[in-house]
Image (tube, rainbow, N blue to C red; front, side, top):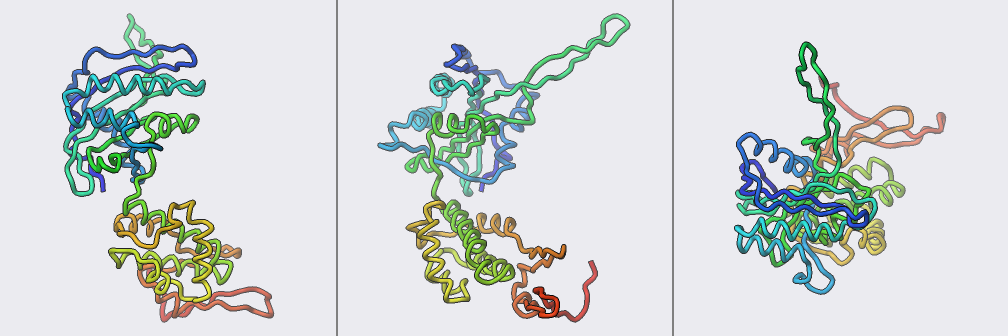
Length: 352
């Protein structure tokens, strides 16, 4: 879990990077920006809001040969080893970004490099290096009194409600390539920021594995359980799967299959589906891993527990009391109407 509430911006360096293919220049500030009490809260909201609003999908620096060949990994290590070097390193970071800015679609913009302290991640307090980029300009109006009239002045600037690109590199898990969060609001140059500039892979910790395995289970439920049985069983399968993750600290696939899949015929189907689709979720060879409770809670919120019928009726199943669906909901076929039906038993209707 990430908590940025008490995070402090210790330093801020601002540079500008152009597009090499359009012969645009790079501008490197000679010194750090002088932070004021008025600007700091605005910058913290500008830099941090996207990371509070999005799901925590972590990355790590990577390289096909060795981490020591990843330029951003080396630059981050230089800063964490000597935080006072952050401004000089910020120039190197901006030059590195400039070298990747050679596609016609890539926009010029300002680069902000910050040294951050007092960040809480996984219940540990660490420092971080923040690298952000603003690209898109917004028109806004200023007003000025001129004699007896109020005049409008059209100006252009950065919208502080939307960060175009950014990453937080935490001084944490260095051996794995540091733990990193990144955002990219503009998808026209998707490979430029994530692959070319940062060169990262997904951070495959317990949070990642828990999310990926439950995502795979959702696809299995939709593609196999639903066609083989019905929507009710699809919903109940996912409920059993999430509950299994919630009550265990470690995932063991054999135990999971025996407890969650009630129809024994579906167990070989599950294994076959995993062999076919497992690589998509990076779980093809995974049979055990520690379970992340936060990822289970996120998955529970995203799973649909509603049966939608083509007669414009919805049946919502209770995940808190899943046994109710087993005991009090029956599916059948009406010969006279030539339609399926759900039969629901109850004692009395509850007040809303």
